Length: 283
Ligand SMILES: [Zn+2]
Image (cartoon, rainbow, N blue to C red):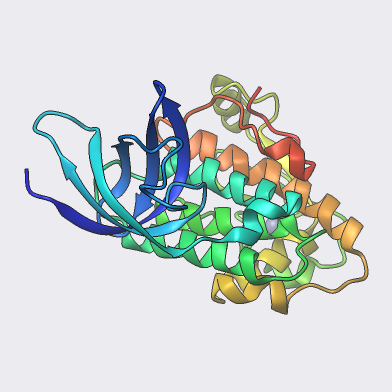
């Protein structure tokens, strides 16, 4: 088959035999592509283009009846060096990548997803300090991923009475439901047996997560903003610990939405989550 050109961001790289590497990348026009990079170990053939997170121009080729592509050339466009040198940034970029890998389609164009991931890496790479805002940023990214997959939850109003999120700021918590992908306010608080049964059938011990309205509002407020501006624009230095804790509770719900609503979502544990202090339902 003829050679293809595409812009690719490395999301996984493993050594194959002594001298080769198998890399997986999110590409602009072919979705996830897994490619064999021959003679790439201990040689300068690909420069830094196969490093984790690096963005490069690829020339590659598919062989008939084979999902594995063969990488001929890769020229680095953006190396995202800071992401590999800073532990917090590395852990967060790895968490974004682990989710992306489970959602993006193989060998099918998904330019919006590519753009989201590229912009998120730019934001992390360029911000001098991301410490304390990792979970908030991850949640923003994951909400966009859910939206892309057609599974965006209802955030703006209570599922039962349509009370808006802004009016609930004073309440300590609301119940975020897994099955119905939305929340109910303290005045409504209805959890039907159906919710409980359907959540249990998917292996959840609970049918909802308790989240502060503030945490949800913080996410809702920046959903329309370019992800590259999020780290810079929305963080107040005070209350960072409190925000991190509230966002960690919110993460549990968002993760549950992926598990419940995305067909075939890989339910093996993720490696990076504990490095940003997150508890996961995937065990
Ligand atoms: Zn209500």
